[in-house]
Image (cartoon, rainbow, N blue to C red; front, side, top):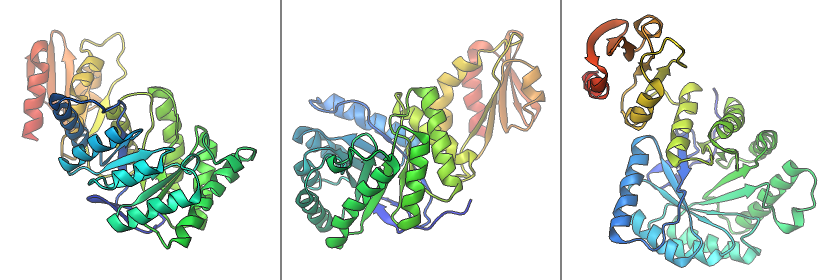
Length: 352
């Protein structure tokens, strides 16, 4: 796929746009206020686990000063870029920039008057921190509420902010134009991309629970990527940030925009299955996702789908009677009792 080359924007240790690799991001799902020391350490540990499975930027809602200060403390302990998500209160955006927070997201639908955005811009320029202008179809500026054409309204909302940015000669900016509609999201981003060279964060907002959300997000994001549009992605789900990251990495891998990573092959199971494929995958999904190896792994339920149909896999595991069989490119490596499946699997992964 040929990508449109947008202007590069540095966000912490990564660069979004400019032809740099498309990044995968997610959002923290819970409040982080009122944490004890153990709570802070627990969050840091989980953030590092998200990073291990492919998270390249992590965004946090910041509804108040206390949250801004906790986020600032988190950022000081991490190399992973953290972004602050600001709605309504422009002073929170300014306060967040006193910390090593890598990006500030503001919503033009509720951040308020132009002078408030100008205040944010002045601080962002001083601190060399990029902004994301996050246009959402469901929270457009008041003057656009009555516009029946959502695509036109979203584009106009983005252009209103662009006018402010241009007057301030500030271009350290990423844009997003999101809707809960696949069609509206795709059309709005294509139109924006035709007119401007700012990098785009793409995704469907309020996409839904795991299955529906992955389907809608994949349809929209892959449609845009095929047109060369998109510099960073988020699969927004009513589910865990871990699943958002796994879905995003998988999407890039299967569109050949990310060549490295583990390709998981697993059978849907049937009445022949003697190995619980789903339970095994639930146990090893994050472990597999965190592997820094360009390999294919097969998890199969019976010998029919084992070394036969998955013989191309670099490593596979399947059930056979009361045992599991581990195989490599169709060749059986070893047999183990079921209770040894996980340990044996990890031992063979380490050998690859």
